[in-house]
Length: 163
Image (cartoon, rainbow, N blue to C red; front, side, top):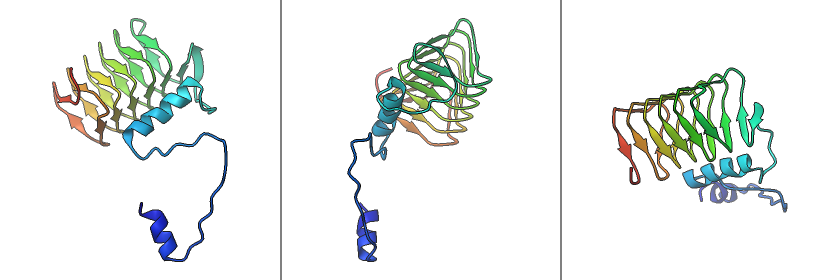
């Protein structure tokens, strides 16, 4: 809404390109999550990093997953992430590099960016959490919430949806 009018005002040339290839404007949280879902489901051909360890679960080098954690794909677990005991990762989860997921936490349909700490018994569904965040124990982030880089959510914080 701003770029094209500015280019036209400056007399710049604007071109189009017709294609049948996948394209999506990811300018809002819902579309950003949808793009990740489309890639993990195989709808979009993409080079997903890491090793495919089971049905639609990719794990990058150095990831440490507790034997009592549940991981159900599609999911991507980034390099050097830590998934604690009794954690649950399911249905279109992308976890960035160096992320720590605490004991008993449940992640579903979400994107967690690099170096974020998810405490114990945290629930995250259909949300985006930025990089370098700290989400303290017993918190809940739901329903399309987006948490900015570097945020700290204190013990028991509730954002969005029914918990």
